Amino acid sequence: MSAEPPQPPKPPTHPTSLRLPDGPRERDRSPSPMRGYLIPSPLPTRRTRTFSATVRASEGPVYKGVCKCFCRSKGHGFITPADGGPDIFLHISDVEGEYVPMEGDEVTYKVCSIPPKNEKHQAVEVVITHLAPGTKHETWSGHVISS
Image 1 (cartoon, one colour):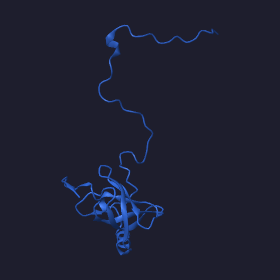
Image 2 (cartoon, one colour):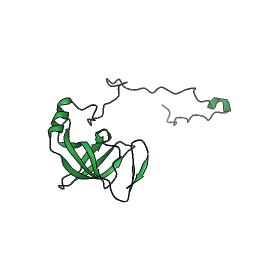
Image 3 (cartoon, helix red, strand yellow):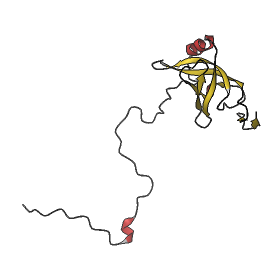
Image 4 (cartoon, rainbow, N blue to C red):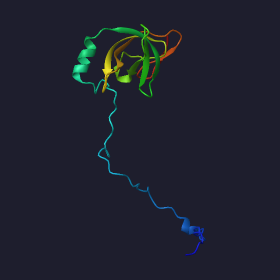
């Protein structure tokens, strides 16, 4: 039994031996039952919300608050309730009216619970009641208006 260490691979001597394979290389992956399917978002949008959840939300009380932040490109933001509770999630599909919400806008909204545990709430039927003064507001079509 010899105690010689294994020899490292020799560097290529000819430049054509450095050729990369053509096209993308397939990766070996373990089989998955969800492969090839899009994973659905856990947040119920207006389109994916069940009819019963929509009815419960529309029958609920109207709350007031201030838009804390809203990112049009991400499609969501948060509302700070006027009563001082925890911030409420706001999805782009639940904004009513022609203006994109901006920080400081006063809004009215109703709430709907977020599945699966229904512990958190999301704002629905959000209406901007007063635009934040001194800011430029954008309409959904892209026009900018000073308030």
